[in-house]
Image (cartoon, rainbow, N blue to C red; front, side, top):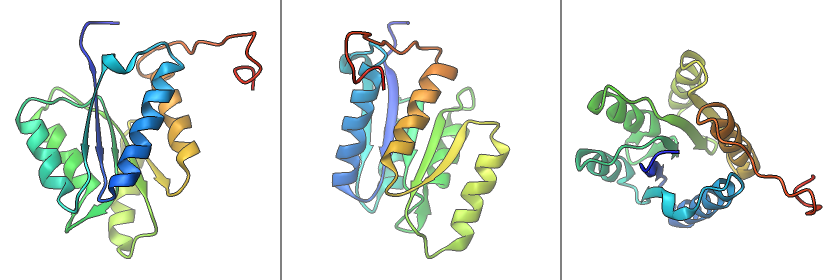
Length: 160
């Protein structure tokens, strides 16, 4: 692993959900021996999540992993993801669109198309399946970042 911190951006209009996702991210990384001090987590948790997320990127934050709600205040997680990729054309972060039942079928359809075209870099997971988000993150860490999960054979919970 390099000295560079792993950039993670969480964007949702629900503060409590952002906090929960952050804690699950920290817990998941710890299973791979990655300390929270090696993570650079930014959260954008208002209805202006798009604007705040863009501000992070404009000031030099480069996310490696993104977990976004689909819709917030006229923008979508897809809009934010596309801004990130367009602003920094040399990066393509892993994206999880963690979405509830959307009134806008069109937004959900765009997310599914993006996921289909991304060759595994984007996934859509319906709320409240946080366990699927954790499974996706573990898979991403193993397959994209090539981290090895630490298993303590003396701990019965690690063997599950």
